[in-house]
Length: 579
Image 1 (cartoon, rainbow, N blue to C red):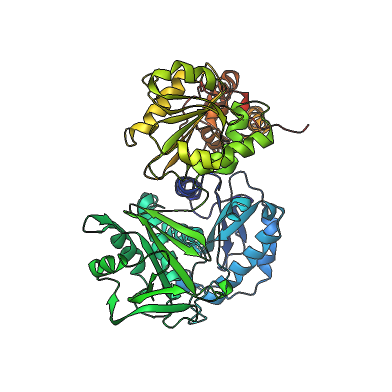
Image 2 (cartoon, rainbow, N blue to C red):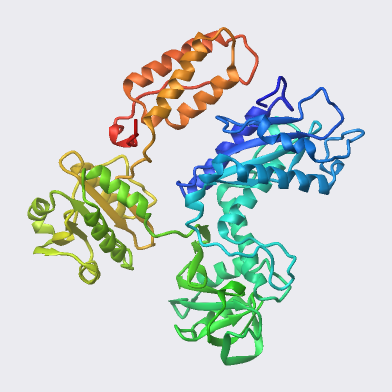
């Protein structure tokens, strides 16, 4: 690891890279704004003073060994004969290290922008190895989170305060288990698929909801029960309604119909049939194990107690969990997801700013307002925002309803999106056509797993993108929302130039540093979209020189393909930087 002359174990760089890639696969699929970064901290706990006390395996690390030097002041019992077993180290010492590492990370300058999470350690060759995962702090703060991390019933049972916290815990536990692999061939961070891992996290979070019922039994069944109930139809109708999860006799629940014999929540068909009686006033009342009847929320619920949750069955195979009117988890077709705005506001504003140069903020605000209204359309729709709205309405008049120009507002948007077809409008919210059937050209960027609406929008965009500024918002019937074009995030060009310079310095250096070479090339592999043709040629040349230079050196040897410029890349993908 960095800051020492040897390694804790031979495959540690491979392990760190694998942990990083697994984090990206998991967290990027849930929210691409989280930007996960993973590194490892090793703390020596055996009696071998010739070995470094602290090791860091940290790609592009913002930390150094001296940041963690205070760990040496924690008194420890030296192990007489390490056996590569976690049980050789006391829980007390482990907890002391965990607490101190957390304190160090919280006090570091990086804590202003990232939030850090630490795994339980794996014992490897005389070291406790902790995995640290950093996530974007401002994005983390957008998720609604409970305040208590223990059950209100027991005061001691640890629970997750949010779905994202359950995901982090699931990932870190998987990381620790992966580090315990006996060989490199056994090292596999995602022993389960990404979907299985996310489902496991949802199971974990639903235990928090179940715990509020204070039943004490079968806290693990609620997630699967909700999935099954949402999948069932009664006399051909899909189940819609709400279910309260709270302790029996909760002070804010008034029963209007009490069952003589409570329904076991695992009796899915009975629960589904009983759900037919629920409406916006009368909800199913449950402690997560039994259904006791129908009732309503009365009085002023003290949400600081965190003792009452609502499960909303929104449509067939769709349900969500709410606390204090805040959605904490959304599930569609048994696949859980982090809840955020249906369409990301930051991404919406960024995309329109980049497509329509110099668009004013008030115009963006109005476009955002009517777009949000359009997302409430249950059967789906398409918004076509373009500078050529008037001309396109004329061209497509035979396959649309051409209208006299009218400025859209929320009430109008609700009306005009009630029919099939796209809505044509300009950046001033002037509408020129409704019910538009879009044309276009065959495209290789379609998605065969999605419906005709999205694929026709993609074809139309491919036809129009070089002619005029255009953005499409596609709201599908299944609730999915796509923004076209799907622009990659903006990056700082100066960071790319710095990495190229680092590669040049390695070429000129008298020593060999394959480890640093691998780190820089991993960065380039992750950012290859953003290179100009000149930069691709420069990187490829430096890479070839270094691969020849390092051909006989020790270290992890990784093969990197040559980089080629992406035809969609342009200067709009670079952030404006202050000199």
